[in-house]
Amino acid sequence: ADVRGKSMVLLGELDGRASIAPADGAFYFLLNAQSDLKPLDIVRQLVERHKVAVMPGSTFGLDSGCHLRISYGALSPETALEGIGRLVEGLQALTG
Image (cartoon, rainbow, N blue to C red; front, side, top):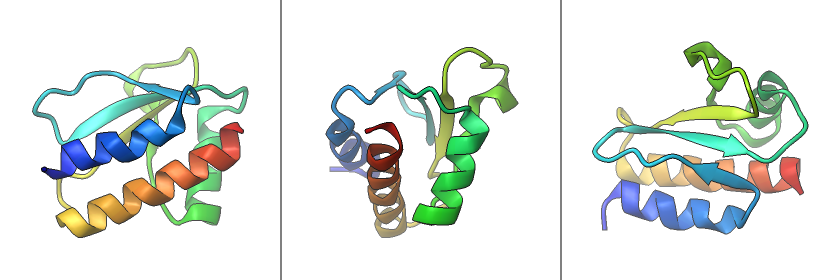
């Protein structure tokens, strides 16, 4: 399977902690984390504690909820999957 498919399998481990909008053919997707934390606080903690960078949805006009934009277009498949794994671990810690 491709990176997108494998990424979706890994993200499935969030099991109700986040929802993901369909991104057919795109190299990014939007994730809505089920959290009372502000998106920028989650972004900061993901970078500092889990070594994975994402963008807050507010950068793209998504001001309600806790949206994050995840992009993997310029990464090798192995690096992208490693990053998605760290993202899942981080979100599990921050939303659990």
